[in-house]
Image (cartoon, rainbow over the protein chains, first blue to last red):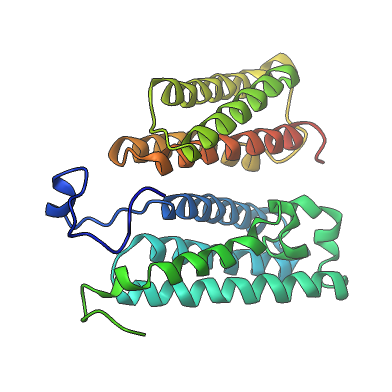
Length: 166
Length: 121
């Protein structure tokens, strides 16, 4: 990384960098992109499943819909500034991690619930089998998200409150 | 959907994705080559849309859900626009990585689209 995140006052390469307090996402942009793609994927998948095969697989498809909503909120929370959104980002990403771990474990242990998904593994709910249908991205992403949120802690709070020495 | 055309699409989208991610990680900003590669992927997808519309009239109908197929195709068409827009407003190395991930996602989606068209029942 070329820029130092905690020194906005020193002579930056661009003059408007100091003038405009616009937050640059940097590597976070990559995280947000993956979240956005997953949110779109989970949402459209859930919509298709609800429109076509809902009665056959109530539980996995409901989970698909719930996870789609969580991914949408998490994506927004990562983009939008302010402490409230920062907190929402933590909450949604934590739910994601718990969700993918619980559902992933359940899908291996209690196959009766996810039998429908077992038949169409790649077509499954986002969290089934730890996200196997999504290249295991769903189980890795919340961890990367938490690491990024931790590193961003100071930036997101300094506008609303004095610098927190937590 | 035509198999060899889908193969070309997947190959070029994956190559463009790897190129953008690597150049981005090496600190390059989006330039003519990388933006051009993304535009090319978008044009391939537009041709894919034309093929998908025309194919059923030539006796090549999708085996799987047509709704799901077009949802993939439309989302795939929108992704490079958003990533490209991002690359124009925030020109740094990470926006190039974003462009690369967008291309890689498209490669995966075209594979999925081909599965829906051919083998899914």
